[in-house]
Structure formats: structure tokens, C-alpha cells
Image 1: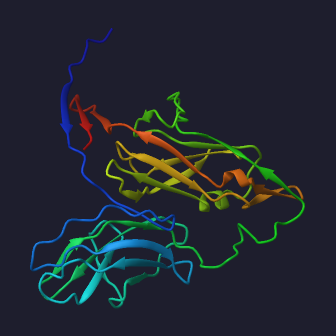
Image 2: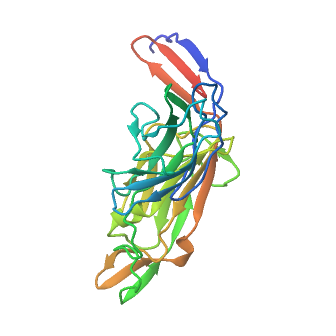
Image 3: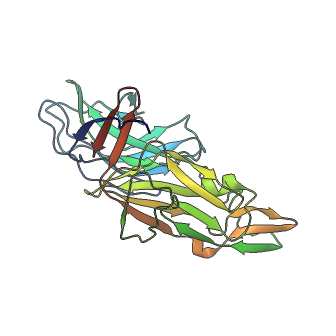
Length: 288
């Protein structure tokens, strides 16, 4: 038997900080505090709507309460958390965004600019670019015939955590799963009609980047890009009702009207453990 190995343990903690908010799907987050002069205070995002084209969004906002002592001359928008800023066209209360990916969730923030510089950052809005039409290929006005309805069950913790109750807090590695009652041939249609957001303890909402993965023709799980945010409510908004999700032979498969709903679960503290086999060191990150 090999001798036991001794591990060095590092524990890092971080207090939860306020985060972000939403819309096309529209949910609006908390208002940011006023800026200190001479910079403008934060504008407020009230909605993020689909634009005229399937690759556009329109960010609707109200002006900051204080301009910092000089007129606001421009607004800037960011879709990557503030690393890169683009200047909005005009100061009319709507900031158009183009050249986006249709169906992808975008988190958007704004700031006002005066003669001195950029001011406080707004709450965050979340939007999904989609063609602004009354009918789409997924959800035609008149359903094709013949068709059958498909339903689905939801499991918030499919990766053997054994918890499905929406009142029990899950770990940040949980994998929510949908199990459909029939085979789905148009899997992209399912993914286009499911949107994932997270609401933190301050009531602020943000989009959750990630991807859907199919286990077979009936089961699909969502994996966030990194981990779920801790101490949050995760909402998966379904618009699968009356959506055409493929065919079975000559019969179309259409989402049940009961699929027009939001599926939710909660996460507890973010606890991430990383082990370095080369140094025999284990690091535990709690809410950080």
C-alpha cells in the first residue's frame, strides 16, 4: 500500500457582491448610487428589446438623475461587463446594438459621458436578439398538420445530486435537465426557445452564458460556461409552447401549451475545490 500523501489546504473566501439585471425576457435590476461630481450618475436600463433585424437589440434607458455639472454628451454601451465600450447613436433614450448573434443571450450595461468623462455604470439588462416578426419558423400562426403534442419533465439536479425541489439550494455545479415525452429532431428549435437567467440576493438579474447538450433524442442538459452564481435563483424561461420541434415520420412534433412557463431552482454558497496534483495543494474557494 502506498504511504499517505499530505496535502496543503488553502481556503479563499469572498463576500458576495451585487450583480446585474435583465430583459427581452425583461427583468430590471437595482439602481446604482449617484456618482460624485463632476461625473454623471448612472442611467437606468428599463428594457432590452429585439431590434428590427435578428442580429440587433435596442437598449431602452432613462437619463441619469445628475449630470455631474455639465450636460451629458453621449452614452456608452458594453456587452462584455465593461471591458470594451461602444458609443450609442444619439442620446434619445434608445441605444441600438447590431452585429450580434441571433438567439444568444447578451448582458448589457450603460454609462453616461459628459465633458469630464464617463460616469457611473447602470443596472444590467439582458436581451436575446431575434427577428421582430409576428411569426417565426418555430412558432407559425397556423400549426402544420398532422401534429402531435410533446411535453417535458424538468430535473434541476440531473447529475445524481438527488434534489429536485425548487426550495432546496443546490451546488453551483448542478446540471438542470429536460426530458421530453417524444424524440426531438429539431434540437436547435428547443435551444432557441429556452432562456437562462440568474437572480442574486439583491434581486438583480443577469443572463447566464453556457450551452445545451443533448444526452439522446429526448434529454437535454444545460451547462453554464463556468459555474452557477452562488446564492441565486436560476430561471429557465420556456417558450416551447406551440413551437414546431421537428417531425416523426410524416407527423409534426409540437410543444405542449403547458411548456409556456418558467422553471426555477436555487443555488447555495459557491464552493469550488481545486486540487493541484503536482504540488499536493488543495484550494477551496467560497463565494469567490
